[in-house]
Every structure is written in C-alpha cells, then in structure tokens.
Length: 119
Image 1 (cartoon, one colour):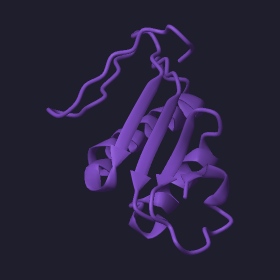
Image 2 (cartoon, helix red, strand yellow):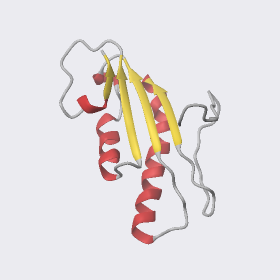
Image 3 (cartoon, one colour):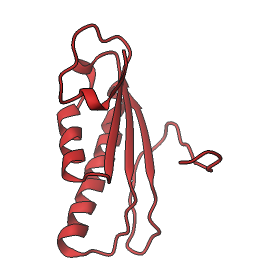
C-alpha cells in the first residue's frame, strides 16, 4: 500500500482466499498474533501452491503478492516460522513476512534476524 491507498480490513469470521481463474490479481496483507496464524498460514500455503502451479503449468490465476505481519512474545512462540521462511525462499518477492517480537530476551538466530522487528 502507499499513502492514501484504500484498503479493506476484516476481523474475525470465516477466513478463506479462493481466487478464481480470470479474477484480477490482489495483493494481500495478512496480520496475525500468536495462534491466530493458523488460518492465515493455510492461506499462505494455498497462495504458494497457486504460485507453484502458475510457474509450472501456466494456469490462468493472476496472483498478486502476499505480505504477512506476524507478532508473538518471542521467536519460540512464532508458529510455522521455518515453513514461512521456506515459502518466502521458494517464492521470492511474491510471499514476504515481517515477524514482530515483543519480549525477546535471548539472541535471535541469524536466519530470522532480517525478518524481525521489535525487541
């Protein structure tokens, strides 16, 4: 998003992302805290599958980007972090993530450091 962009937010309710062939591409911003990552991780996996299918077989889905903002007390409470890093590596520039930790007391591993904000 850029300054003055219009965005839609949805809190609670059913979570799904099911783009259809021929739909205009959308850029997703997913925001999760703690175990709230569960439905959003499923969405990320679906997006990764669609990107992989698109690259391999040229499907008709037009996909935008997905940016995940995920917060927890510390890096040990970031669920699926290794999987999320793998998705970013497999689909560079298409799937990105920014982890935010609020109470980290120990050193953050080098693999996570570029993606961590907070203390």
